[in-house]
Length: 480
Ligand code: NAD
Image (cartoon, rainbow, N blue to C red; front, side, top):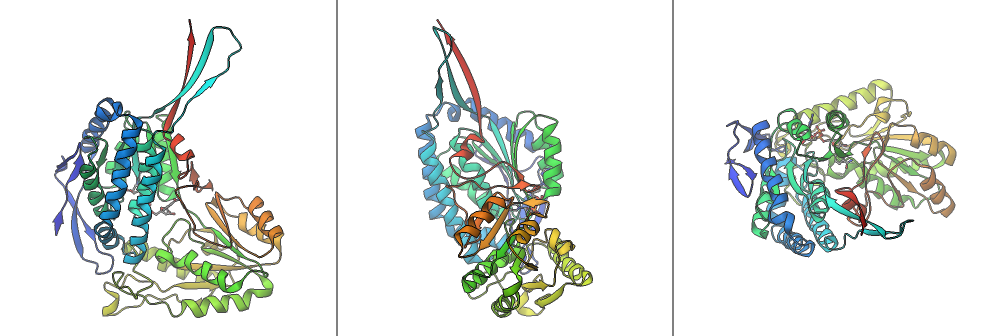
């Protein structure tokens, strides 16, 4: 079993706590890596290194040289995609093919932000006084802490690290305690690309032991967090006490809305990938399906027939379509929600079981599950399950779809399937969500912002604007 070390100041070092913990393979249930259990003293070492890098060669580096390093990193991600994929898939149990696609896509974030590094322009501002002028310049904030969940560890880290480095900051990355291994492999690429010491550091461990010291450290002005709303709320409160800049990408319970004029075959495929990709363990999962009454029975039958044939098993096998749930507590939570839905009176159309047997390893699997006869007040409709469970709700017309779609505390994303331009425009105007997909679902890109309304978070990642999220604004007055 490989025993890892922390990556601080371009050195591999043991945690000062002298403690490690096991990372478990979700398919076999076996421990497969030993992860440093860092604490506040390790955070301190990482902050000193990251802060010194801001004052040192990284802080002095020209933006175009910064861009070259990011470009080099992107090429290394592509070259080492197999190694990164293997580590991440082994840790979170997602399909090898799915993680492989994410890693290759992750490289594109670095190419994109590499090209922006020398295009961060300021402003010259016209003044109403003679012999005075004012200019506005943008400066890096300093040390950025990235705190990420287990479902897409590297990709969600890239969403933060690529724009933050483009803007000239340094990074301390804190991956989820369940998926740390891929972050160590990623750190090796920073060394290889030639980044100066202290620009990218990795501290691993638990939220309360290493996450909180990072969030409250006075020399970490910017926190970029993705995770659940409980952790997000805690981080928000702690950071507020120090007036920190913060972004939070939190949970969702996104409506995927099917109108009677939609292309139903395409919509059915969109619904299936919308909820069952990564076994439903994605923030943007289309976990609330709203179907117009007139097509409800026909449409759910299409879903049932596709879902019932899904192949579950070892995520490393190319013919497998659904991997295990990433952790045992998450598996227990998903199974509890299935019971809650039954108790609430929802009808299980397909799935609902946990298959057992040698081909299911440690048995941490949940069949793709569809509940019909759901009303929007049920817990299965209101709470994030973060598993392969779809709640289907009927609606009458556009007004009804908007009302139900928005009747939720989250606002991450929404899907709409219709061939009517009028409906598409109306729904995209009225749905309160950070992303609206028309006749597609789950599309994301480095070129466009992603983030939530309401309890789904604060701030946006992706696109040109994401760089601004990692910059301070300075107004300079000049007079002779
Ligand atoms: P989590 O909140 O338990 O953990 C996320 C990270 O925060 C981990 O690294 C954890 O160690 C750390 N953490 C936890 N408590 C902390 C604290 N008090 N201080 C500092 N750090 C702390 O989330 P999870 O269970 O790993 O991930 C699942 C959640 O993530 C889901 O709710 C999902 O919706 C959300 N998510 C959101 C997005 C998005 O972009 N909106 C993307 C993926 C996942």
